[in-house]
Image 1 (cartoon, rainbow, N blue to C red):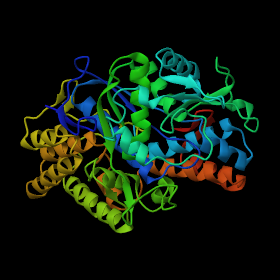
Image 2: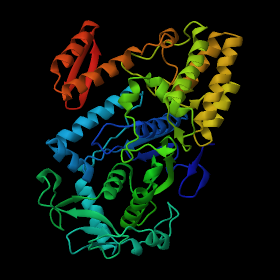
Image 3: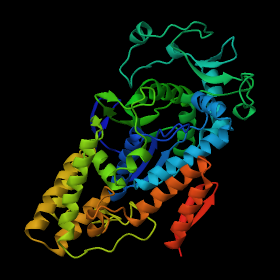
Image 4: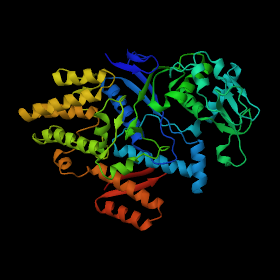
Length: 475
């Protein structure tokens, strides 16, 4: 029986899907104005793990992770760089995909961009207005009337009195109440035309919160199973999503709310605003992508994750121990098909359409750990116990089981000898080379970009550039 810690109820609850054997999950993705940092990597790896476990457990899952491609920070950064909003966002979407691919993160079933769902946002705002929960202010913005929505604060546990006491003083505001938040921002003369849309309230653009409400309901319905994201989004973003969605559709929005913990540096949250962040690509210049993935998964997703070179070095040593156990036995399973990286399928012989085969005590313990709110820390402890068994009594069967269970977490699918020798896998090496080539192109170092392309071609790898990014194939 799978149990999930529900932020809304503040306890673990048995997971009961709305539609039997079917999961609909929405996760707040990236705001694409810069490179992703390790905090973003944790969100992507954690919910990739959740997605894999549902698949391994026999569920039919639809996974949506959005892209915020219109936002104040994006507009400001594009102006600073002297490029269009689309050019800026596409550049960083490509970079995000490169980072995710390197970490073995499966692409979501849907990856909607906010700019593609403005009509759906306007429909929700119109419903809110009709329901008496939205109003157009004197400055032209359309705002949500927080005090008119019963139950505001139920996700974060904040009362309206607490919020009022801690509110920021606004120098100038046409809101009816300082707690109200913007749904539609009126067009400003200095902003580019590409961030302005027509509406019944005048030209403008959406507020951040309404974007996710529209994309989630459009792709998963007005009421769905799981909504996830980083703990920093619990308030106000997810709180406002609940108010908007339930206020517009007059039904429950989400059954289970999941929030992963922060990545910390020197006991402070890693963030761009604090300037203490490390981009994924910076970290991957020093550490193998599988080591980074293992580092993230060896901690429970809700716990803080402390970043340091020492912790990553320790993760490398720990992963070495697992691969050393596999090295002691001839390869029990064929490698994954070329170009797939850490694919969520095939998941090995013990995981099929009906879920995990738990005839083995190790597999049973692994399943019990994962069913207990996705306890990857305990599941990885099972992998080490199994590795000890492989070391004591080497056998094809036990090594195959270790590799099978590792596959569920996107781990241990490499050739052990190659990993232990310290080299990247072919796929990880190619991903790293693609990242380096794109960085060279962005720096207008076309000679270096061409050198990387020729080097890969000499190794039998052809790069193909398109609007969706750079892909590769073997010749």
